Amino acid sequence: MVLMRPLRRVSAWIPALAGVSLIALASRSGLAAGLLAVVPGALMLSGGVRGLLEPDMRAPAHAAVGAVLGLLLTLPLGLLGGGILGVTALTASAAAFVAAGWLGIRLEPPLADVPAPPPSIAYGTRVALDDAMLSVMTWMQPPPSAAAVRDAVRESETAHALLTGRGWIEKPESFHVVPPAVDAVESSSLHIRGVDCEHIRFESGFEPHADLPGRDRWLSYRENRTCHAWIVRRREPGPWLVCVHGAGMGTPEMGIPAFRVQELHQRAGLNLALIALPVHGPRSSSRFSGADFLGLSPLDLVHAESQSVWDLRRLIGWLRAQEATQIGVLGISLGGYTTALLAGLEDGLACVIAGAPPSDLIATNEYLASSLEQRALQAAGMDAARDRAIHRVVSPLAVSPRPGRDRRFIFAATGDHFVPMTQVRALWNHWDRPRISWCTGGHVSALMQREPRRLIDEAIAASLGAAASPS
View: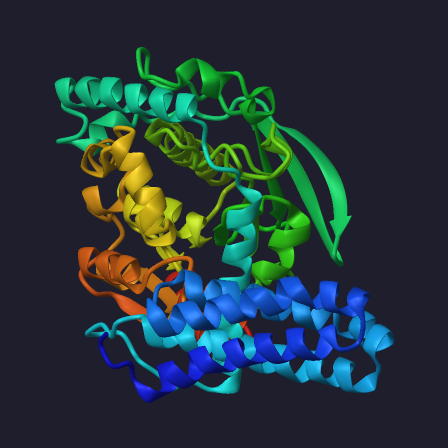
């Protein structure tokens, strides 16, 4: 076994010992307390042991979610087993949570051009939040059936032949057509989170290319046929910022605080438009917002991203008809990917800001999947190289950005466990290394930190002529 760095070893021992201590002390306090402590204790123990024996990204995820459960169960355990058990659950779980973040930080190999800040309690907590959320999301998603995998493989084989034959893989720009102008808009007034806005709706009009697999499935999502956006504007013409949300978002209740709409509108004088990506928010037909965007079939992402940039280009055209003086685009996470793709297709953008952006979603899926899951999909006929070729038609790395280098901006987090740092660096290099800001934290906490907000403010001031307040 390769000797681990001392901090990595300590980071693995802490959740392991926390889990053992919690289970042992709770079992002395009676059957009920013992049963209550089994799940969080076992998760912390398994995460720590896995981190010691065979380090992979599942180790900190298990430890983190076990620590969260331990924190949530502190009060019930205290009531069942007394103050000592309650204090033990609280302190052991808190220590395990921070240590899980440290373990996740140390499991990431260092990369050139990417800062490597030392672990701290705040840094570990932010990274552990990513790990806990990833673990919960994995458990909520059931494994695909054998029939679903076979269907996805057939779609992939058919699509690869079609896209290759028509030259779209070689020239991805030709896959995307310029959408028509918006001819009719429905509008209603809303007051959300202290902000007066307009909720506009118009027919998307998007249809996947004929003969592409998954076309009928995509068109069956009835709610997705209507594009939704929330507009916050001033009476006089001025600059606009289009905000593109991440996976699972798509409502103004989430978007307004995430994009600091009130601050950018009132203090920077910006007009803002928050769009709902396909199958997100009011456009979702599923139980979870965005569940159909990244499906098992590689064609799901192709249709979803194709419609995303189609809808964005139609919205941008409508904003220009509203006498927008300049238009910039800010995207986070999945929205950062979409913004980067849009930058290679749409002319005349004042700036593009990609926040925590993935740039190869096949590689991202491989990063998040266990080795067992990867082997199972490969045995069923899934071919990552073929799927990556298919995704090339919607890849930001396959198109050249149209805004000048000084109009491209990227921000990311050094401990991001949703988007590997290699993904961000790949886009940064493809964009000719523009201004980039790294914050010390994880994916979920990135927008809440000072460095990304400062970068956004600088980009707005430099490209849109609007000065946000100091962050």
